[in-house]
Image 1 (tube, rainbow, N blue to C red):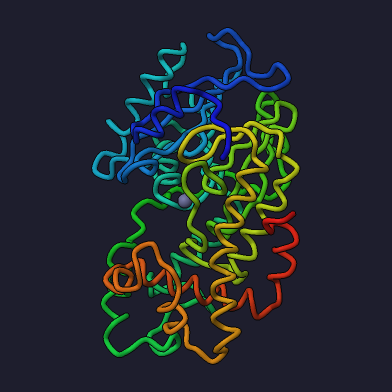
Image 2 (cartoon, rainbow, N blue to C red):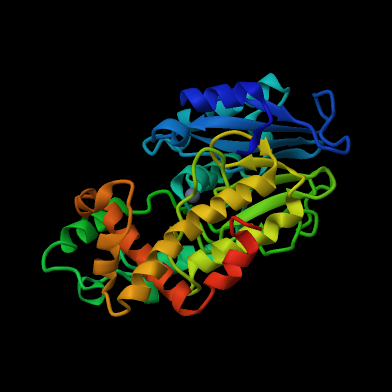
Length: 372
Ligand SMILES: [Zn+2]
């Protein structure tokens, strides 16, 4: 298990209650200013529609000398995108000697409503610059240009014929997914900066007191970004890795063509260089001991991969539908067939089969296997 950094956040997480804001101090004396005009870093829990750990999302707020930066400003009130949505942020900022008008930069880690939803409106409301990952912006553009919101996913498209679904079983679920995905949460404004892997906010001309670096960590979405402060050893991981729950994989609104499962495992391997960092996830609680959580998370993925591999070893010709019917699902296969999770579940099976066909299992067992 990952080690909680703050008792109060941990207790809230176990109780499923939105935690109150906590102040983060860097490992090397960063963000230690005494308030009112100096440098501070905060993590705020923002309530969102959902249950348990998924009933709030963490937003990171930097109070800099030259302005305020907000990363993932949360899931907005769709009916009131100007007023009440930002009142709690304003109230928080006022408690630290600032106001919402001091927000100069808004960053979204990825295009899900709980992360990007309030980003566009907050930038519009305050005149702040909006920063989105260049890769995630490609996903947004693909999604916007695609006529079928249930299936903008190329070779991972879930089609009744392609997956071998019995007549009439998959169509209603595809219809439900279409209905749910109207993408109201995407920003209407054009981002001011599209940031790429390895670029820092300072490279983008932003003040030097918040030297975050973008780290491309695809898997959850194809363009998912994490951010690190290498000097202060802080990793803002969003939905890349979380305590308590494991993130969904392949949940891009538009897909760039890579296999999200392989990319996810690559991301979990790549962030090993941050194993000693303090981690701010998208949901749950801030934690340390990233190495343990990376291995737990990778093995959660590998466990299903092993299951699919064993099924395919016995019967290589099975359809995606037949493979899915033999896998262990937390809802059970009967439950899956009644749920719109069926679509993403079948998509995952396509991804697992492709990853196994490419012969990647040995490599991932070597990197993450239990007896390392
Ligand atoms: Zn997400």
